[in-house]
Figure 1 (cartoon, rainbow, N blue to C red):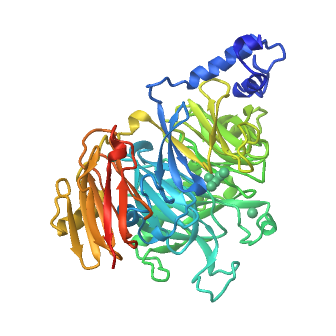
Figure 2 (spheres, rainbow, N blue to C red):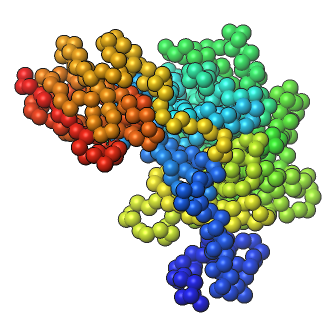
Length: 624
Ligand code: RUQ
Ligand code: CUA
Ligand code: CA
């Protein structure tokens, strides 16, 4: 019968995993009486759920963090097909990101770094719903925050956060709109960090919570905190932001960081912070002009809520009621009632833990929680390699003493999950359809690729009463986190608009040279600098030859005058480290030194035409 269904033994075994044989309480699949026919039927059912036929479109865009690979990836959900990659903190030779003048302008001073470590991609909102404008993501490695424009799916701003090291948790203000990007700096450093002291446990050593003006992409304020900061989330009133802290000990080693049975969740009162800054009650640090306020224990700007132990994920429920902090070294999650925070800030409680209304025990290594909009939460259990589905209301009632089993199901995932994310879960529109689980280990689930394994991003159908695993998706390092948006919530441009700010500095430069970018093919000589302007139209460049002198600094600026969707050109100068994308109606430029005399061919690198191979030209370099 196996042969009849065309399933190999491995496929047969895989099918059990695919359809969630590890359900609590045997489903048809998990039971011993399961026939081979019903296995096959279940496999077919799972496959049909994620099947997006040739030429058909996915229902959701997924934005995947590329981790320490430095980029953002665009996925289609439910097919889990990778649609696009958006280079951000990495250098990308296909698009020329990090090489072109336009990208270097956006990277600013940090263009000297060629690495990044993305963790948390989040989409801008208005009144708790996606507005389709921007995606923001952090770079832990070089303490940066980037913004991506969703209309062109390119990074348009990068900011280095001053006075701190390693931005980790990142979330956006949800209500009334994304005015601020909130970013946790993780590591405690001395202030000033100039070598005069190396002590971490002194009052002059601290880390800060950061708020960035989302539209201007400039620093808005910084808040000094006790301990350190890990993950964060904002509420649905616009008033509060909560962050987890795993190093309340201010320790510098592993043992020390695990000493306390409880660390804390820090809650920031955004209104009070804004009022203090308005009233001039702030300091500045070093040569930075960013207002800095002191939010350490005892401050009226923050509250410290003790929670067990080295907490990690921090997630607000889409009904606006709770912040949920995952315990990591404790098998619990701590549920904080947001409607009690006013009273906490007004000092109405003796013990800050009075705002905790539930502490469900879920399993080993709880890291992150997501939501289906039907009152259920889904928490990843790193050590157990499971996702626990639990009912929030029942967990709150159980905390008050009712005998209830708030855990609805545990599903094995493969293996060691970090983040999980359900469709639209961080907005009021949480729709409970799909759950993505980002598993850190794939072990034996794919063809072996040597010592370095891919991660495994699994897709789970959560539309019914039971979670059903429907897809394994290998990915390269390392999707820390992802987010999903319905396809109708995003409007992309088909071709570039000629007045796009993405290449405005280059247009400015051309104007000074008296160049009409859409028409001119000209060489401007300016001392040792040579600026070459040309158009491209499939399958030819406007200039097939230009001459420079050895040692000249050459800037090639190309304007793609094709108006046809999908006809992108490229420009590669052979043996010069020069490569870039020029999509329809885009202007791109790149600068290099012509250091070798002779003939140097250039060619188009994006397949654009039947005569794409013939789309070439020559740079003639005269000896110095
Ligand atoms: S953190 S695996 Cu960088 Cu998002 Cu939790
Ligand atoms: Cu132009 Cu290929
Ligand atoms: Ca700790």
